[in-house]
Image (tube, rainbow, N blue to C red; front, side, top):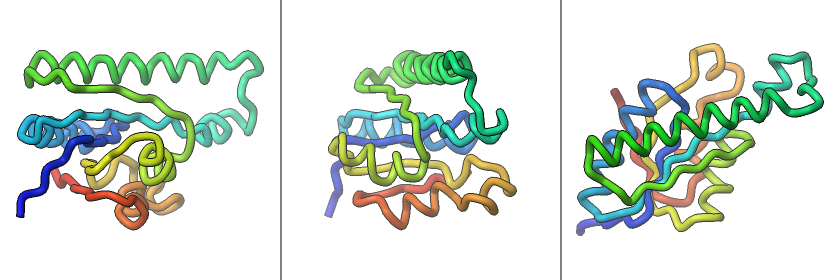
Length: 150
């Protein structure tokens, strides 16, 4: 039995693993004539940890981070259009816990039937302290998941 996917989610975080997964997801989307949803989740906990539990009052750090993420996502989208000749791509930036947004929140807002993600984007210390986002998503998401090993 052949499975066809119409809405494919690819979470990206700037890591080599995530971008490798994105390349694989583009090929899957092309074969299935699917829409590709590229998502970056901005973990607000990084702001509070890095700045002594205080965000700057006017939001400059958050605004700057969002603009950087938006620029990164737009570059990925343009590269996919130019290099893979694939147009059916949308980009998303969200604030929150990456594991919860990917496995639950985004799937509530969009009809995702496949998540394609790298096996890890965090370093060993982050995985030890918070656990792997990939592990959480594979245990909790209510759709098919492909983990790309580089």
